[in-house]
Length: 276
Image 1: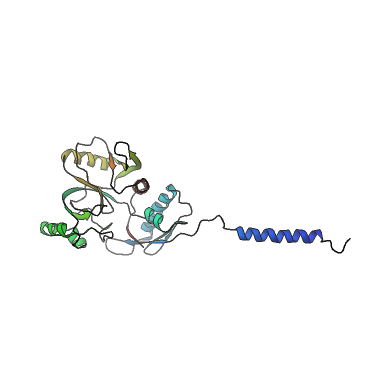
Image 2: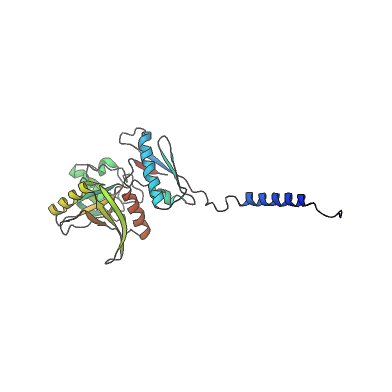
């Protein structure tokens, strides 16, 4: 045998080392980048610490939303006072979308006013007062801003002064006559207006309330609020004869209607959360 020949065993050993190195180098190459965690801090009515069972229920709802959205690899970790949601490759936008509370309320519109650009943003005591004088003053002085301390923190049994999604109009609303009560919600494109909407099907109880209310309150306005913000406030033109209604809004896009329909379809979270 020539002294320059390489033993076959040595060749196989070298190839094995090269193959192992390539496998290690390629490990995780197809994995999506880590996402930005979003912390959802829970708030209870009496400001006590939320129970583990309620947090687990919220986790289940968010996981269902993530699965429906195809957000594979999403993690929802339960802490002592909230949740941490991480969507792979996400800057936090998708995590916030599937982590929104998603409370739908229908409230009568009592009065409206333009946003006061030189006004203030008062808290819950003024915004949900039952005193007509306080209501009138708050309605006139409220400035609609991007960050609203009352969002997702209103009491549906009380009147409320809030803004629409355009941040241009202030609404004085009566107590909610429907709270959630959704059997189904699907995104759709309105063929007549070419606007993206959400088709809502109420359950039996909410559907009966909706039909009765529209029959008794013709030509008045009703506000559809989601987490305390007015999405739309149409005038009732006729008594509804089915538990179906269409939710629209000037700020709704194809993506946002899909997200909103998914949020409403799987039900509201059992707690109010603040995202950070």
